[in-house]
Length: 82
Image (cartoon, rainbow, N blue to C red; front, top):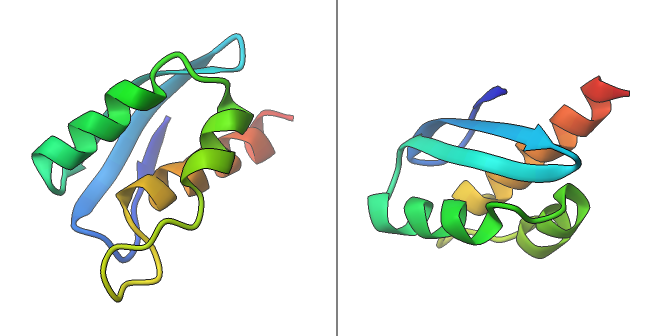
């Protein structure tokens, strides 16, 4: 799935979900080290666990962050799969 981010430096997030596990997360743009770190930590994690861990994280004074945008993307994925 490709998700167009809102309110952060990254432009989009690409990911797959297999057996309810998050796979192959790739951020386009953003802080390279941070987004790679988040992507690797989330890889293989249960989608609901990932959402609960990263949803609501803020970046400075912004109300969202790249991890939070990934949580929003995963929530959108779940809403569209059912």
